[in-house]
Amino acid sequence: MFEAFSGSYYLGRLYVEPRNGTEPAMSRRQYETVHRQLYDVDGNDQPLVMKLDQRHFPVTGVESVPADTLAVPPEILSDSRVENPPSLREVLLATADRADQLLSLTGGGGRPEAASEQSAGLGSNDGRPTGI
View 1: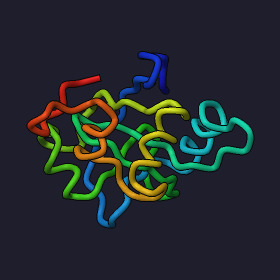
View 2: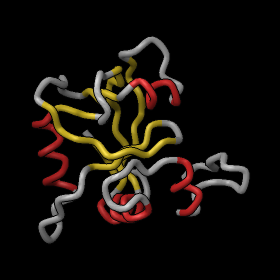
View 3: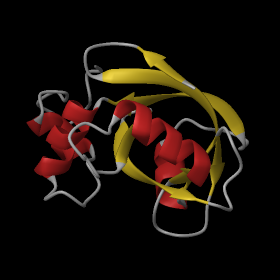
View 4: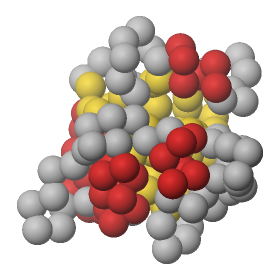
């Protein structure tokens, strides 16, 4: 589902679709598999952290989300370049170390977004992300 992309991210392709609710989610079974394979180091229980376009956010696993799908709340979808969802898109998954860094910038449970990206050296001085 995800393959190594850089020192901080894995790359995957998922269908992105809208979701009612406040948390981005993916299939619980796939979430648990990905978490076990890529994040379970010394009992790490932090959520997966994904990046869609220029926005980072923690993801949870939910039974009702279909396989190979990232379901996101309307505010994340409106910040993305996703048109006519569901849409097959490249999605970045932060490595466990990078996810820990991003989550620590928001107190561990918040949504790492543009302000956090700039703090982490990913944004320009005017707040526009410069990429990874």
